Amino acid sequence: MGGFTLDQSQGAGDLVGKLETFNVLATHATLLAIGDAVIITGTSVAADGVGTVDAVTAGATTAVTGIIAGFEPQFIGENLSETGLPALTAGKARVLISPELNYIVAVTDSDLTNVQVGLNLQVDASAATKSGGLTISNMGVISAGAATTAALKFRVVGIAKSPTTGLFDGSYARVRINNSTQGTNTAGV
Image (cartoon, rainbow, N blue to C red; front, side):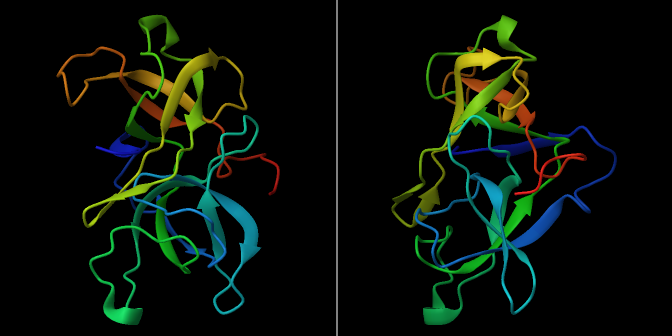
């Protein structure tokens, strides 16, 4: 399990209106994977007017637009088995944008504790990697610096069961986007 995996919605209804398609420019520098957190870049593609996204950075004050749920297939060169979007390759990403969605994600430093539930965390914005034919997200959250700070990217909803140990040991968290570009009264990018 890599990156942010959709767990459930705290909002009403299914995923209608919670999934948006964005362009990814050929200038993006890292391999992108399903489960990566992205931010809208403030530009669009002239051919269709659709905004562009790129991987989030670890900076404490930048917001998150959403989590990549999939990519439009790469028909050029018949690269239909690619599960990610290689660096320096243009494409379209399907992004879960609702701040009401919860995700299960690895805690990449020290395990979360019960007193950190409800606090906000920073993202570990590690780039995706290839393993065999799969592209795997390496993004997670960082428990160090957990705080009430509104600018931190993710809110801890709860501690999740570890897929490796089967325990609620703090190595995985249930989170939702806290600092979102999709909220109301947010600054433009």
